[in-house]
Length: 129
Image (cartoon, rainbow, N blue to C red; front, side, top):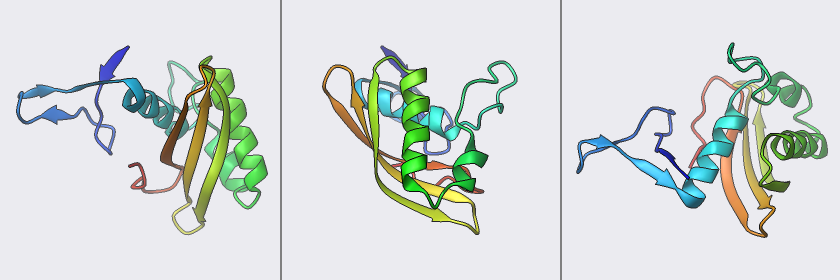
């Protein structure tokens, strides 16, 4: 499956060489999809209120990495059939900005694994790489 490529700010990426939007697929598309899901606060989308992770719950329990990992695992495995499990490899919560930066390894049902950086909540979301 292919999808539009997004910038770090979740805007459509414009390919300067082609003068058009760029498309992504494979691992990059899968990571982009998971980052959007994790970066969306549950209830944020009027047309799909069940989509997204409860950012307040994650922020309230930021000190308990086991809890955070389980919540992310439960959400992604419920939302996406291709996700088998999730392991949080590194986490850094900044209480000033309420930004939770995470390095996550997502194990897929087909045996592959994806490693990604993402940020949950906060007033800035500059950790996606």
